[in-house]
Amino acid sequence: MNPQRIRMITVGLLTAGLMFGLSGLASGLLISTETTVTELAPGVFFRKTQWEPQFIGCNQGWVVFDDFVLVIEASFPNQAEELIKEIRKTTDKPIKYVFDTHWHGDHADGNPIFIADGASAIASESSRDQFLNKGVASFEKMKQEKPHEYGQLKYGIPSVYFPKKMVLEDAKQRVELIHLGHGHTAGDAIAWLPKHGILFTGDSCVNGAFNYTGESKTASWLAVLTEMANMPIKIVCPGHGDRGDAKLIETQRRYFVELRQTVQDAINVGQSLEEIKRTIDLPWFQQWTGVSVRERAENIEHVYKELTEKT
Image: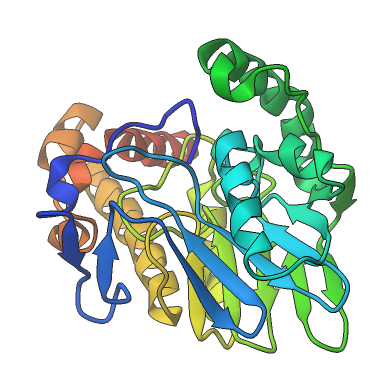
């Protein structure tokens, strides 16, 4: 989710703070107001962050190896600080790496906190230019908007990049950092733990009304999700929202398949963008996310532009 496009998820997302996912789509109960830490497998932790009443950042994780810790997602600076506190409850091993799934501030602006703690930031080679250009500019803007949090911090540009895949492995853990293609952003990457069947997706897959398509290519994003769906997944840790299983990947994929097809069908019969935005309806999407598909107008606009540029 782009930090410059973050808005409060509507009250309709949850009723009294709780919502059950559409049967077989989400992994049970979504609790928007709680930040929780769960050990998913020995030495593998998932931190699901709250998004109501205040959006505080992306979900995070960490993996404890024999001699070091890998953090997955830096989030915002204040959440990086909170995550370090949680890590220290589980291990005193040094944090050696922090992996950014992409450049967006709610996933990577906490890098300087981890770097100051001795870690190196890792990202895909395809995200390098985004960090150097968009990331730097966004961080400087946030320093003006949130001086109490960003203060005198210097932007933490990743120092380790990988082209398609990077493996961290010892006798205990194996984590594969993989760039599958242009999805949510051009530089998206995921963290796959094959021994445990656990996938950390970043914003390539979310659980709820969190999709931001402004930098995406949705056709390519679908291909990325298809590759994920072929993995023997047991647990999905999305960039936002509660964790799920392999069905969550299919749910995320269904959104883009049906959004693209519905918009294309409307184009074929001569509907304008404004007509599509006013009439489009995917009832199952509201059951999944708690909001109407029409409320994510920017995604409709983006898909319409993609489809009309082709024709």
